[in-house]
View 1 (cartoon, rainbow, N blue to C red):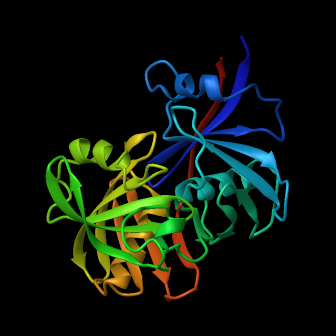
View 2: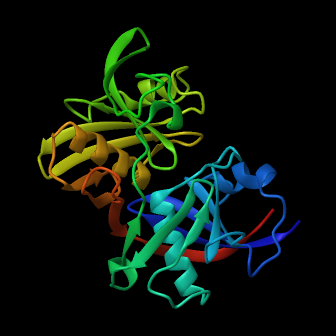
View 3: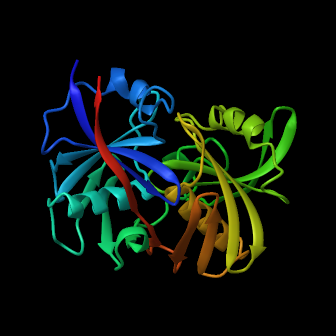
Length: 285
C-alpha cells in the first residue's frame, strides 16, 4: 500500500483531486483512478489533475484523468483549480502562467480574491470550428466550419446540434427546459455517437436572454457534472455564431456561474470563474 497525498478542489462544482508530481513520486495512476474517483470508497472526483514539470514552451504541465483512467485533452474548470493549487503550494507566485496540456498551452491569469472569492481568467485560445479538427463527421468535412444546427438522430429522435472544439470536442443542443430534459438518457447515447470518432462532451442549453444561458453537461468518461468550463466556452461560441447572445455572456451551470467572452474570428475565448480548495489529505492505494 502507498499513502498518496492529494488536494480536493472544485471550480463551479466541477470537482477535482489534484496530485503533485513535482513534489511527490507518484505510482501508475491509470489502474487506481477509478478507486480514487469512487465517492463511497475513495475521495471522489470528476477529473484527476496531476502537476508535472513542463516538457515544452510552458511553465508547468497538467495531466487530466477521467474516472475510467483515460486521459483527456483539456479541462477549463480544472485549469483554474490547477493554477490556484500552483500558487497555494508555492510552485509559483506569478500572476500568469503557461500550462501545457494535450490540447496545447493554456494561459490562466489571477483576477483577484481569496478563498471562496478567488477568481481566475483563462485564455482558452480560439475555438476550433472545422469538422475534421473537432473531430466530427457532421457538416462538410472539407470545410472550415462552423457546424451549426445540424440534424443528429439519437434514440430514434432527431436533435438539432452544433459542434465546437475548445481543445476537446463538444456537441451543443438547445432545449426549451434544461432542468426537465432527460440528460441521463440522451447524454450517454450522444457521447458515443458515431458522428464523433473520439466521443464527445455533450452540452444541453437553455437560452434565457442575450446575456444569460443555462447549461447541463454530460462529460466523456465521467457522466453528468455540475459544471464544464470548456463546455461553457463551446456553448457561448455556438450561441454567438447563431447570434442568440451577446459577445459577453453569463453561463449558469448547476454548480455556479462562468463568464465567457469572445470577440469572434481567430480571437481567443476568455473564461472567468472561481477556483476553490476544499481539503487536503492522504489516501492509501
